[in-house]
Image (tube, rainbow, N blue to C red):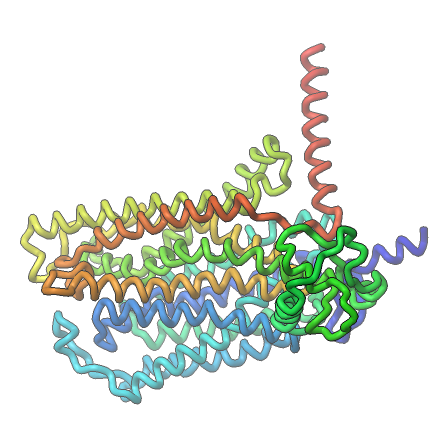
Length: 594
């Protein structure tokens, strides 16, 4: 008994301190450690969205770029920000570990922010002010000015590549997968993670955007830089409380070995008894704090990699666990692809949605609403939706489904995809109405302000936040949860990668549609003058794209197999929920009899 009690004091998931020593459950991890991570993210989101939310306005008003060019420059940069995490995840999982990868990347991140603040502050690093209504007539930025500005932006992007996939994973690592109570906390972690980071986003989309539009870009970029510096200090202050996962080698190399071994042994017969396949002893995994995974019937071709043929080369023979880890990462790829289109919709928030806002009446008395500040309603909607989801929706659904999450992660994502279809229908109809008002008031050619309040765009922003509460939270948790224990950072980077691809896809679609619709002397759907454009057609095209993507998603999830739980903690939680239901029924019977 004493031995079991002593064992219970230590975490069972292989986490250690920075020196590699086992971790006492009571001394490290849990919500105590998570608060430092969560508070960091509030300030970091303020920094990132302080730049990205209003970037299209800076590119058009200060660097004098047109609608398509500025929109594509924003989405290309944002795409890079969300693609680089896959490299950061590789470095963390294979070499440095999550903590040190994060710390080094933070230094690169803050360096990019400092240079960017200088780029918007020094007159020599930006073109002269221009009051022309058509930016095509303004003096363009020089090669040096563009090099400094974009050099800073992309330095920042490299820094985020190491911070984004590791910070949320570090937070989730603070909860032991093998402890039912801590597993229960982890189920709520990603909801409250998203809830907390959007406080920083809300500040960026309201206060910082207003400062940039009305006070100046120096202060508007200086404050996010200061916020990032504070966030890094807060994270470092929590160092004594963190649990850490030991780097387990390159996940790409391990997966490549499985694929190569399976291809080289494609003619080999798979034995009926899984025990005949190659696998390490359980003690080997226990020594390294890793988890052994049993063979599964899915993606059977890859199982050939673990069939014994006499060769012990790692490129000819892989353990069953290694094969199953590869299967888990490959099984998620179709789900990943299904999230590209909704990520493209998210890219419209800081590009075309903001450009629409510049054409509308933004006055409330003497106060003028910055167009980018409407993104604050995405944040508010997200915050409200997450709270309602976590406090009410989950509890109601638990009674019906007996699932600790209320609904499965893929069901939650599916609800988000449906909302995205509704968003683009509303956006198309709203834009059609805006164009009709512009035409009625003779504002098509003169680019005048359309006599409609900017709040006519509010529904599409609010619903985008609601969609995020379902899709974005579920996506982050899904890719973390379904990734093998030794590839959690890579799994988390999947959720980042989808946003990156979505932004690049947005750039491709915008340029392609703009070029095709202007070909052969046609008017074109997307012009610098939005009053003469047809964004309503473009948004209708997005409706069709979302519907086709939703059909693809339904087909994909029909064949998806969730990975087996590595502990019985989910089973314990499910049994507790069923027990609570039995108790409620029993109490109701007693009350009816009395």
